[in-house]
View 1 (cartoon, rainbow, N blue to C red):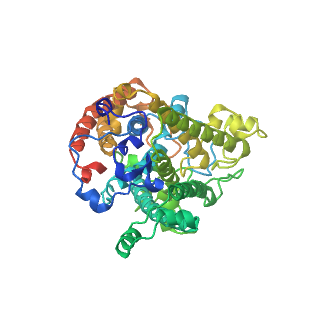
View 2: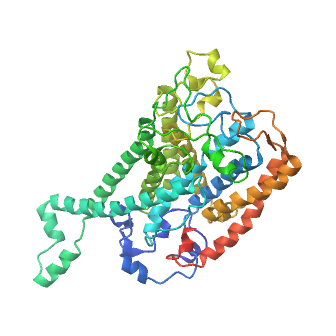
View 3: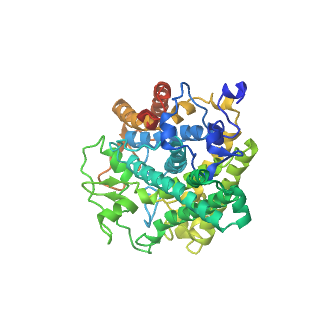
Length: 509
C-alpha cells in the first residue's frame, strides 16, 4: 500500500480495503469462498497485534454516526415530554386502527428516526462478517437496557452462527461442484503424486475459482430468500395478518412498549395491564411480537428484526467479494436504494407487505372511503408499522439508509472525517447508546423543572404524563446540548478502544 493511502482512511473501496493487504485471504483480488478470510483461528490468535488503528470503512461509521443522534432525538423527546411516541397519536403497532395524526414536527421527527433501528440491525449484520474475519467472540453482557440491546444481542448471536454455517456449507458446496466438474480439469488441478505428496494435497485440496464463485452466489441467493422470509413472517404470524376490521381494536393498540420502557426510568406511575399472550404462548411471543408483562418489556422481538441483520450480512459478503471501484460502490448503493424504493411504492399500490391494511381512519380517509388509504395524503403514504416491522417498513427505511451510504461513500475521506461529531458517534456506538440514555434522563430533570407545562394534546392513555416541554426551544436546545456533551466523550472512548488489540473485549463496545 502506498504511503499516501496509509495516511488517511480509504474511502474508494470502503469495505474491501481492510482486507486488501492480506494476501492469505484472497486470490486474484477476491476473497476465498466469498465469505470469510481463510486464516485459521490458530493463525489469527498467533498474529501480532496492530500498533495503530487499521484502515476501516468510513461510510458505515458515518451512517452509524448519523442514526445515533437521530435515535437520541427520539429518546430525548420521551424523557422531556416533547410529543407522543408515534406518527399517529395512538401507537405504531400492527393491526391497530388509527384515528388522528400527530402534529407535523412530531410526525416528521418520528418518521426520520424510523431509520435508526433498521440501521442498527443492518450495520450489526455487516459487523458480524468483519468480526468473523478477526476472531469469533461472544459473551458481552448487555442486558441492562431493555429497549433494543437485547434484540441486537440475540440477532448478533444468530447472525454470527449463520456466518459460521455459511463458511462450512460454502466449503461443502465448492467440493461438490469440483467433483461434478470435468475429469480432465479435475486431473489438471490434482495431478497424481507420490503417496506422501498426495496425502498432503488431500489435506489441503485446491478449489477451482469457478466453483468458489458459483458457491458464493448460490449462498447469496439463499441469504436474499432468507431475508424475504424473515421480514414477511411478521405478516404471516400476525393474528390479523396486518388487517383491521371496520370496528375492531387490536388489544395492543394502547401500549407503545418503547415508551413504557423509557418512562419506567423516570416515572413511578403504575403501568397499564399486560398485553395478552397469543395462542402460541409467551415464549413464542418474545421472539416474534412486542411483549409487555411483569417480567418482560420488549418492543424489539429478536426474530421480527432478524431480516435487517441478514441483509447486512449479505451486503458485506458482496462488498468483500473483491476490491470494488469507488464508482461501483456508489452506483451499487444507489441502485439498491432505487430497487427498495420501488418495492415500497409497490406495497402502497398493490396492498401487500403492510401491517396496517384498513387501519387508517383519519378524517381525510373518512372523507374518501373508496380511495386507496395510502394515497389519501402524504402522511398516509409514508405511514409504516414499526412494531413489529412490516415489509413496507423494511423497504422504505433501508432505501433511505442505502441512499445515505451512497452519499457518504461519495464524500472524500478528508472531508468525511471532518463532519462534526459523526465519526465520534459512529466509532463508539454502544457507548453512545448507554451514555445518552442516562445523560438525557439527567438533563430532563432541570429541563422539566423550569420549562414543563400542560400539553395541549392529552395522551390517549391514563398512565401517560400530560405535562412536558413540547416541541419548544428549551427541548431542542437541551437535545443539542446532550450531543455536544457526548461528542468529546465518544472521541475519548474511541481513542481508548483504538489502543486495544483485535481480540480485546473493548472492540465489542
